[in-house]
Length: 252
Length: 276
Ligand SMILES: Nc1ncnc2c1ncn2[C@@H]1O[C@H](COP(=O)(O)OP(=O)(O)O)[C@@H](O)[C@H]1O
Ligand SMILES: [Mg+2]
Image (cartoon, rainbow over all chains, first blue to last red):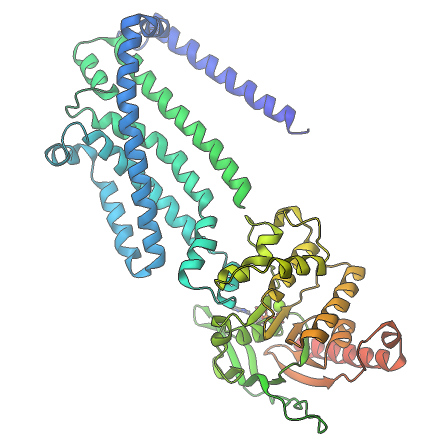
């Protein structure tokens, strides 16, 4: 009851902020305050609504979405397994931590040639997405697993739990909120990773559209593609944040 | 180290055949390292001998090492010096065989599991099929019928403690360790739980160590009461309580009972003073 007015205030703020942003982008474009590379928002949207524009964006968004989703799934799975391995075999922990940090520290640009020769142009976006998601997920899960309620740990010890049952009945359920945290943080990273991965010669995708629109000075198309990527990443984030809230309620 | 431990009299009842020793703590010191070279001696030369089937209560001011004694008996900690044996073996053995029941001071329930699953946890941890009738019986015993599906955060502090006690009893353990299990209960529920615990103990004769700060509770339940003093913690006195069982209201109103309550309360106050 008493949270209702607060929620409505929040929603009002969000709407006001969004409206302000839209008006500003439109004005900056109209008066060319940021040069001719910043078209008015209305131009971008009207391009999105033309049949050619819409078709192009939908087709390429689907490609990027597929790569991002594959990378998201792969990266999350490998990271969860890695973090679980570091938990069960503490000897591996420092090595895995360092490995994740090194992978993360290597710039994507430096990885690109390597990936193109190994996995190919089509799959490079998914792999780059997986690498970005994997790091975020590994760090989140490692801290989720490290969050040892020592009383619960003692409880399993006095009831004579073996390692496997401690993992399944205590450590995994306790890390569920962290897992959804990782998904929420990883989703935008996956979209970004896939888009950047497409810069290196992918046959299709929003990343390719961005590069070619830039080279051909098609500003409306460039912004439309950027907008599509942003929308995708924001939507994924919002969905996983909701799931994270549910997990938080259910598991704590 | 300089403290001379009072040796507790072993419950030597000449009319009974010699019973097995369930718990023996021999000259146990516990020194915690606090970092930056600081140390804290929690226990000094603690000696305890508890016979199988005996109910022992430990009372003492807060911080005198009661929980530490229980942790030693549970095999969660090891004494710095001295020895702890449970049924003639090292304490961890008992836990590994799923013969130990513990209710911790901080109930340690799993927040994602229902009351029912929390109580059934020891079965799952032991890899045994859950005995539904036993779990239902325990839920009824601790007065939580109707709350089977509730999760810990929906319960009051006292209800959580009761779940934790039911969980400790789930596998009918050979040794039951209870660390201030009734602390969050109101007086009425507390007495009811005392009576229930006395009844269970009467039926199953589980060797029990109960840590409490309630002198009445100790005298209603225990065969012997161990009074501890702090800094460093050691056993000050051991009192044998030989009121007949069941110890109903008539006994708790008797002048002998009150005399013993007063005596132990005095000892507690004195040990409090010694600790300060
Ligand atoms: N893990 C620990 N590390 C450091 N000090 C501890 C630890 N556990 C207990 N202590 C200290 O040992 C003393 C006895 O603690 P405890 O056994 O919990 O007392 P009680 O249960 O009688 O209140 C206290 O001074 C406490 O601060
Ligand atoms: Mg304590």
